[in-house]
Every structure is written in structure tokens, then in C-alpha cells.
Length: 356
Image (tube, helix red, strand yellow):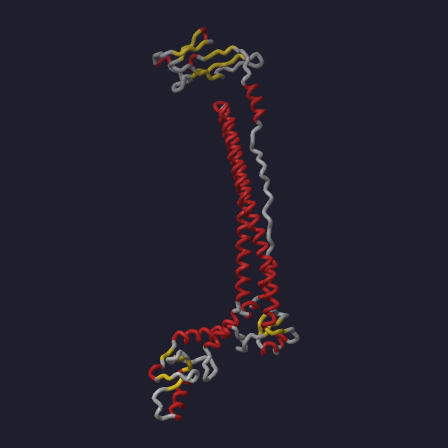
């Protein structure tokens, strides 16, 4: 425990002469360290007892050494300063006394002076070490709970990733199916193919967005769980004062956290065309009736020749005069306009495109 480590450090930094934390620690040849003032006072006493004494003896092991060999220990002095700061941090800000008690009613560390103030009168207080053990058990239970939640959250994440992988694979499969089907009648239904692909892509984006949003939320939950786990691990490994500091707030934050399961997203794909119906419609669409078509020679491209009173068109390389040019004539494509005489409706001129 951190408190035991601090206690051991204090013992190591305690002068064996004055039995207090060393001040200006110095080391002698045998390796023992004392307060500077303590060892020099000891040397004076040894000198008084034996005025002719050339070498001095270590107060602990009696190893002889010379006064000139005494040297300061700056590293230990820095450690002692750290120990003093650590001990100062765990003292009551108001009374400067050690925070050795824990008020159960207020859930905070107090000193013996605080216990006697009206603010804590009638409150239940226990020794901090005893409260530490109780809270450590509670924190360990919460830590176990959070780890279970973390495992569950990880399982959710794996499921979401698997769903994304399967869904993307299914999307690719459907995409290939659509492309293959539309190759059969690509020249006729090119726009329809693009329409269905767009719908499928749109559906994919929507579903993937919902799945990835769920994944992102699960990742946030994972980070929050990890943060609480690290906080509890740090408290459980720290001193009693560190563990009990804001203990109630820590428990409240953990208790308030609720693990949310991911949204149930339907992976059914709806943007698939009904190929059977389409083929049926195509068959109906391409069922032709024999009708009379009359073409308009004023729209014929220069490489087209109209014969038999507008009912026959042949290819030719004609040279037209400027007087033969008309505003309706095709300039770029070898096309001509005409109309079909449908007995079920009135014919409309310039209705059909004929290409050679």
C-alpha cells in the first residue's frame, strides 16, 4: 500500500540519534546517515571523553572514520523534502492536523479537531484506516461491475463490427447482382440501373451511419468505463486519504453511469428491384404493332435521303445548297423526325426519331 511505503520511507529518513526526520543529512564512511548537527554534536561528545582521539566511531556500528570524510547526502535531502510535502498534503486545511478520521455522515476525511466542532457534532466517525477497508471492498465490487460492463460493451462492439462487415459484404453482392442484371438491357434501362444503385447506396449510407453511430457511442461508453476503472484502480492503490477523498462523489458518478445497448438496426435491404416484374414490363414494352410512319424530310440529316413520299429513308452523302437548309434539320447525328399513325389516337407530326 502507498501508506505503508510512505511509512517505510519515513523510517529510512529518520535520524537514529534524534529519532526525527533528518535535517541536512550527511553520510560517513560506513554508509550510515545522520543529521549534520546530530553527528557533529556526537563527535564533540566523543572528543570530550577522549581528547587525544584521532578517529571517531559511528554511533551505530562503531566503525572508525575521520571528521573530514563526512559528506552531505543531497539525494536523501530531496527525498526528505518530498516526504514532508506528502505529509503536509494530508493535513486539515483549517486545523493543520492529520486527517486521521472519516465522517460517515458527510463522507469526508476530518481531523480530531474537526470532530469536536458543531459542524460534525453527532456525526458517526471512524478511524480512516477502518473506513478505507470498507470503501476498498465497495470499490472492488464496483471495479468488478465496471469490468463486466466493459466486457459487455466490447461484445457489443464486436457484434456491430461483424454486422458492418456482413452488411458491406451483402451490399457488394447485391451490387454485383444489380450490375449483372442490368447488363442484359443496359442500353435500354441504363438510367433505371443507376436509379436502383443510387437507392441501394443511399440505404447503405443510412444503415451504415446508424451502425457506425452505434459503434461510436459504444466507443464513448468504453472510454468512460475505462476512465472509471483507472480512477478506481488508482484509488485502490493509493493511500487511505487518496482513496477516501471524494469517495461518495466517485461512487455517485459510477452509479449514475448506465450502459446503453446499441440500437437495433434492421439489415434487410429494400432497394432491390423486382426483376421478374421488370422483365414482364420489358416484354410488354417491346411488343410492337405495325403502324405507318411518315417522316419529315425537312428534319433529315444531310446523309439521309427520303423516298416514296416520306415512308422510306436511305443513307446517302448529299451535298445540299444553302437554300435546302432548314432550322429543324439535324446537323450532328444522322437522324430524322417522323410520326406514327396510331389508329387509337390522332397522329402528331414530328413525333418519332429515326436513325440510320
